Length: 330
Image 1: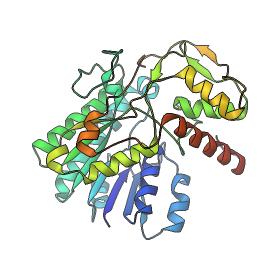
Image 2: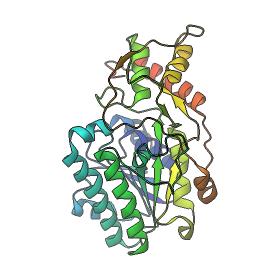
Image 3: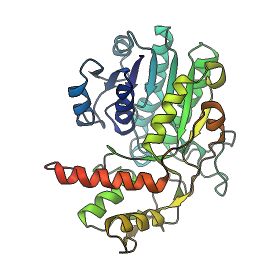
């Protein structure tokens, strides 16, 4: 049994990781300021396992709070962030403060603490930009960020490298592609595309596509990301410290194809869902596809949940949640 600090653990990915850690017997301390995370993502887990789950309400920009949160901790999974490209374009200074300076504060706290066995940083495929759009993105490809969010996440990767090499803090950056699954908030104006589409489908309203819908993404179910984080903690430090690893499925799916799949899930044989098209959003890349060979080699990572199966599970979860939760925002 080990002890984990999950920053941003009330959020989408963090809460899924917390459930997995508790399920295998580990203890989890969540640090979250609840600006985007929701306590209800952990409510059932905390009620059922009060000795294994602790919630600390606060900010990663508070060094003294970080020091207290790290007492007794073996691993840090750093997911706290401003989680959106459009949001970062609206508020670039906040993005830099939270995603760049906040990440630096986490690494400094890990250095002060001195006994952290691994820091796993949630990086982003947004760092690649639109270079080499016809190819799977590989970790040694050049990066050309198109948004403050992408710049800040790329900065976090550099801190991973520096703190591993200079200060001996064993850190690894997992460069997430487009993650989706249960507990992802569909109600925000900055909501990711799949929960947004599912929400529209369940409510019977027309979804919006920004652009022609032929832009493609490597959509990766959150269970694959959970697996990658656990593997990144277990991998020998000499193999992964200071490295950046793509985490996706290696499968390219257009937004129009997502709507086609959702149409079949909601009304078998009913055809794709018709969307309203709006102008493309600034800062968003056209195509994004992961080359995951390095993660396979260094972590033993193999995505266990395909896009089609992940979408089926996610649609079922939102449909059940919407039906059973009074006033649900889904």
